[in-house]
Amino acid sequence: MKPFEKLLFDNKEWAAKQVASDPDYFKRLVEIQSPEVLWIGCSDSRVPADKITDTQPGEIFVHRNVANLVVHTDLNLLSVLQFAVEVLHVKHIIVCGHYGCGGVKAALTNHSLGLIDKWLWNIKNVHRMYRDEIDSIEDEEQKLNKLIEINVKEQVMNLAKTSIVQKSWKANSSPDLHGWVYDLNDGIIRTIFDLPSGTHIDPIYEYDNL
Image 1 (spheres, helix red, strand yellow):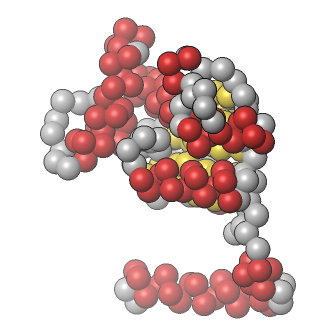
Image 2 (cartoon, rainbow, N blue to C red; image 1 turned 30 degrees about the vertical axis):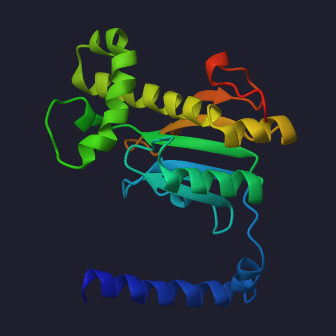
Image 3 (cartoon, rainbow, N blue to C red; image 1 turned 120 degrees about the vertical axis):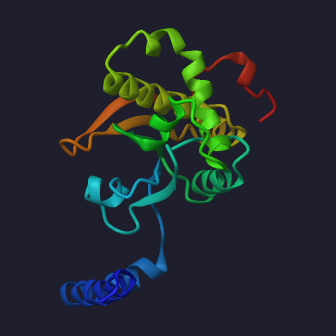
């Protein structure tokens, strides 16, 4: 059996088990979607949001990309964000990175990797802003993990800089923003940064006409 064929086979097995244990399971999912959390995570196959949080379909609205970035020119991310905030009215947005992230590791080098260079440029900008702190760390693994943590914090700040989030903060006093990092070594998520709804950020980025 080929890998993609196994996925289809396992899907049928899973669906049958769900119906056997709960006949109305899929009916409930079809009727409504009301997650309270938007999860912005890394595309890494080892960090699936539902698995590492032990949540069920319908509980988390998910967007994933390389190195869990919040880029203001990324229409995919912004579309997900707007839908989550304005339609689903999520109460929390989580940016979750993970230690050992390959995207962040690549951004620490000076190697050109092709098209992805344009994406990793965003992480290099984070490195530049915190260069003294990061480059003072001699151990390469610790240096990488420090940039991973700082990158998560900066992506949370990028969320707060969007008109989508600021408009919701003023109108609905939500969502709260959170920065987490998942550790592949022990399976534990660690809180890095929290930004409650309505927190004032640098006035340069605050809109006054929302």
